[in-house]
Length: 100
Image 1 (cartoon, helix red, strand yellow):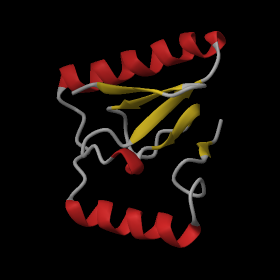
Image 2 (cartoon, rainbow, N blue to C red; image 1 turned 90 degrees about the vertical axis):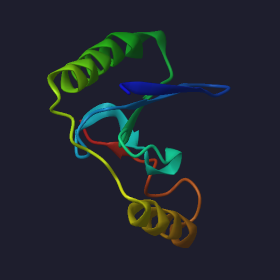
Image 3 (tube, one colour; image 1 turned 30 degrees about the vertical axis):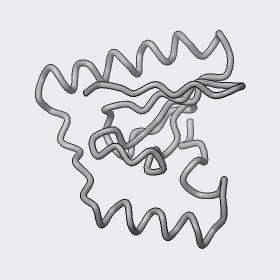
Image 4 (cartoon, rainbow, N blue to C red; image 1 turned 60 degrees about the vertical axis):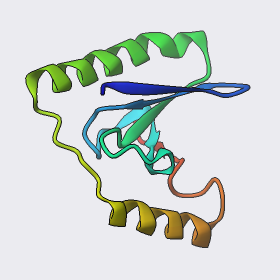
């Protein structure tokens, strides 16, 4: 799987098959979505974000086609991340932007 799209009232959230520590202004940690192989998500709020999203999707497609995408999170990862989100409260930690 290359991606999963979630529609929200004011943005799109697209989980992607990229490396776990990929840094990009559109990307956030996607552990809240619990996809084992889609560790990050792009948050698209404006039409201007679409070109950058295209590049990220193309990168994810290349990783899947080449067989180089090796992210596979186990159940323990999601249990720990859920507990961490509960401790820190909603909206903190896992959904922060990942640099630029």
